[in-house]
Image: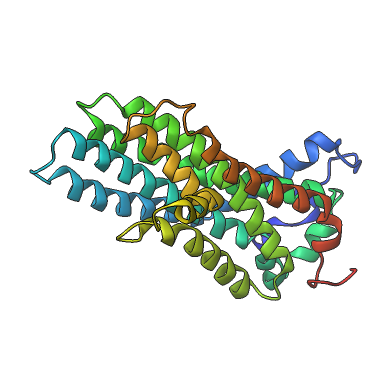
Length: 278
């Protein structure tokens, strides 16, 4: 948030009574969304995302050697790029959530508002997820263009929504955890970017993961790799949705391991200084 947008009057009801628990996080989320989308930061990120996806879709669509199987693979790869970049942007936005407020000098006034710190991080999490849903909406026409004629557009869009949303929730919560614990905003963003790079890079290795049980374990424990493997099994290999459902265990575990500590420890980690009791 900007300094001008985080005044107490933005948060306190006219009667200066603390809002009910359910309304508190929605108030935070609404204010965060206004700051994100009206400040120009959100639209700029969305524009950059659309340029990247446009370039990739153009290269795939103009390949004259595409046959039926290759077209399915092109749709799957485009969906994977859309999911990966979408959750990356979501992670970076959440990584700025607490540490960015500290550096801009707006966290103190935010902590003085009549909203619990749990509601504060929940509202910031919800606002960060609007970035993921915005990138998903932008990706729809690109997937539709590449998927015409192979009857997998509906599957690709549903898979992108399911897998991408689970990954976005887990990584956005992880980004807020890193942001709350980091000494500076640069550290928070760098650590968050490295985490996503470490999770996504193995899925793009030229030779793929090692064959055999070791490669299978690596594919299953990496939440990003497991989610993308699940989509590939359905879109490219034609598997039923239930056949490889166990690949979604790792993304689900990521959500639990990130969201639960974020909610339980919010009073301790959302401080004016990381590790302080203030």
